[in-house]
Amino acid sequence: MNPTKFTAEDFNVFKIDGLDARMEALKERIQPKLQSLGDFFSNELSAKTGETLFPHVAKHARRTINPPNDTWVAFAANSRGYKMVPHFQIGLWQSHMFVWFAVIYEAQEKSNFGKTLESNVNDIYNMIPENYVWSVDHTKPEVIQHKQVAVQDLTNMFQRLQTVKKAEILCGIQVSREDVLKLSDDAFLQVIQDAFDKLIPLYKMR
Image (cartoon, rainbow, N blue to C red; front, side, top):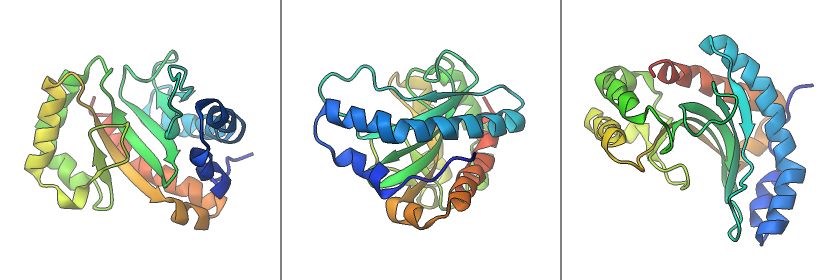
């Protein structure tokens, strides 16, 4: 059975006050959907990248006070975790869904990968669709529109990835809550698949 799209009730989980109550709702409502998406797309991504990619549903285990404002399933070529390697993500905030290619601050080869991105900056600039977005901090919903950046802006981000310990780079799409709710289950899966197809060339540069 194919995964189903996120619903209004899923997005509303992030309105629940308190760590325990929100985590209980996440585990009950959203994590099963993320696991289903993980199982479904790990096969697709493995076939298209030529590597075995494993799904990892975010557990938010380190949180002791503040409830999570977003959650996700990540796909990585490491069966033990995803934070230390370039990876893909599907997830949601209260306001939107996201699909990312991500290199976050724990990534071990971050500096070398930043050099590779910088050396391919013109190709990347032309390859990424105008409606895609960039982020330099996966913990914040704010993004940079690709259509509003210049090659030099990307170069600066890629250089920062090489030199700043906490630097991150993410590229992908955001789909508003309202637009997700309008999609059929099949269209929802197609939106994600289309995003992965556009992002796989970035992943293969590592």
